[in-house]
Image (cartoon, rainbow, N blue to C red; front, side, top):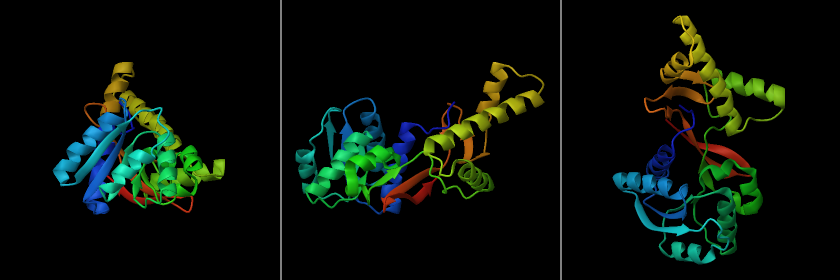
Length: 239
């Protein structure tokens, strides 16, 4: 079991957000040519088709590629509403920077890169205005547990928690809650703990309500965000 959403959930939520929240009619996909990029792009395309979101093009690039201007120019010719990248922060930063150099003004979705400081370092000012999705965005969970976690964390560490710190916090509390429930039923073993982890439903975590699904995946809020003035700002919280 895990509390990080499966890649297909990320891709499907992104397609839904683009179609419903951003009112996009078309996109162009840039896909890292490996087992990270293609499954995400495949799941995205499947959901996009259901939603009537047109994929005007899909190009796979090699992980070692650093010069993207020819690909960007070709993609811009199709005039999509959004560029969507399924890749890593290095490529995202270089693409955003090269788009600015080419004066391509296109809304750009860069996935989890938006929450990684190295992406902003590589892209420079071009990172501003780009969109992404995070496992957790501090301040986006308006629940008593979410608020108390944020308050305690800031008091102790004098900064906001990262998406990974929020998830790490919740992993420990989900596990502790499962052990407590197993103990209440009279027997604590690896099997009973596992069973109670899989019985987790609507656990009020710092990153939002957490439900472990029968296949071990998780149902939990996903924040879509925009980078504005160097700060990651919530755009929408998808459930």
